[in-house]
Length: 167
Image 1 (cartoon, rainbow, N blue to C red):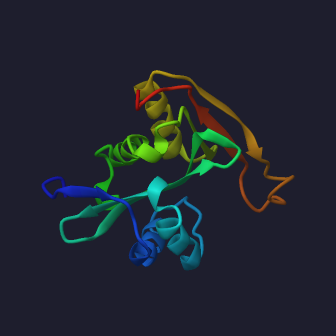
Image 2: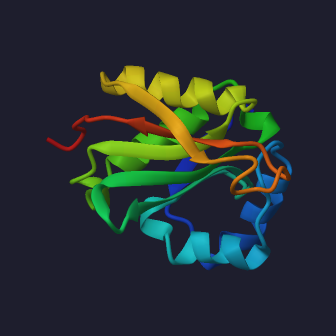
């Protein structure tokens, strides 16, 4: 896989089904409906990124959006990397490329939510904070009992920043 070139592009609705299949192949990520993935790949294309091999196979996807009430904050919704593309820093490359887009020119914070057991995501966002030369704070976003009625683990809000990428 390492010999194959990976390209990074804005996704489109054509990518929706591939996004759905990729996320489904990446436990512990929560799968959404295909319709949700179609919206992520079309309505949120400016703040999402698709990583594909030369043959068009989707091997990575990051979905995100600028928070409506915090326009300086990019919320990273999901990060999915195919098993065949893991271990190459692809997730961090995708988020870093998102931050370089003009839509993120006023972004000085990244937020995401992570369950305690998702060590891959914790490692990614700690590494991003270090790369950006800033701090990472965590707090409870959605509580297992209060919000999920014990059917899903607590989601911790992770906030990275402030930082400046597009100075």
